Amino acid sequence: MRTIAAVEVDAGTKTFASGLLPDLIAALRRSRKGDLVAVTSRDPGIGPALEAWCRLTRNSLVDVAVEEGRTRWVLRYGEVPEDVAEDRPVGSRLWLYTNFDCNLSCEYCCVRSSPKAPRRALGIDRVRRIAIEARDLGVSEIFVTGGEPFMLPDLGEILVACAAAAPTTVLTNGMLFAGSRLSTLLALPRERVTLQISLDSPTPERHDSQRGKGTWARAWNGILRARAEGFRVRLAATVSTDAEAEEFRGFLDAHEVSEENRVIRRIVLRGSATQGIALARADLVPEVTITAEGVFWHPVGAEDNDLLVSGEIFPLAESFAAVRRAFDREHDHQRRLARIFNCA
Ligand code: SF4
Image 1 (spheres, protein in one colour):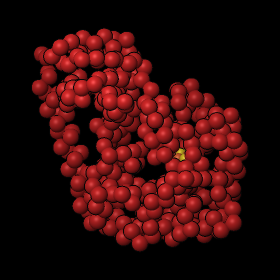
Image 2: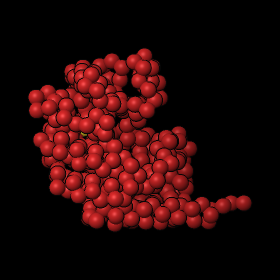
Image 3: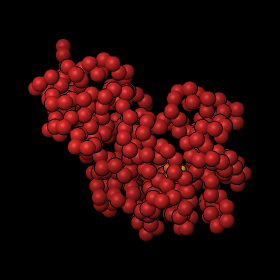
């Protein structure tokens, strides 16, 4: 899907040696920090120079696509607009994408999950080995996500294996707590497993428009049921604006949801989303994320090549080391750039 940009620059035949730079500067002058600016050219050769210019000017190149023989680069103007980087040691958190299929197909899903998405299951055997090695590595939190994890018939075994290694949170849309899936839920250890259930708005309209008709009511029922069964439930909203975030905070206050049981985050321009915050790898402090395809930098782009660190999961110690090495290398590069461009 085409990334929507605030400003479009048709570079024509221009390069950095022949007039492209003034066009870029003019485009940024028409933009606000955080806006996306697209540059289109028939000459793919301007890509490396554009990439270098983005690094030096601290803008982020967030997307490249070829459309009808022309290359379109999308860059985000300015530094990261949100406090996306948290001060947490690399390797303290571990994310597992257990599957990519889902009962929903939300319009902003960062990994394009849907009922038609291939499952791409991590599988209980790999999860057991990951959990054992993660415990030895001192992982302090495990997050199990997808897709919708409750689609899996062996989710109970997966969560028990993870919970034996570290406190575990399973991210779910909360809509499948019935029949054998309810039995799976009820058998989970309450003291080691937290449910993080998505609810995007205080009332059904916005949530249903993004996730499907009737989904708000079913998610809310899931939240109430899980709480009634004695689980810690964290409510997670995905919003587009500060006003939506504020409105949701009011809703959480009214329902006496404590701070540690709230997650409010912005839509990210990845996966199925066509609008949202554009995040490049350099914007994200890594949180090791494992899928059936390998080891990724962060859960927000768990099928995007720019965030793939390694195709090999095991040994887990080497995966963690690879992420740390890449983080150190890239941060060192940024620091050196900052030194080179000290102006006074
Ligand atoms: S956002 Fe969550 S519930 Fe929606 S399609 Fe993606 S995985 Fe499924």
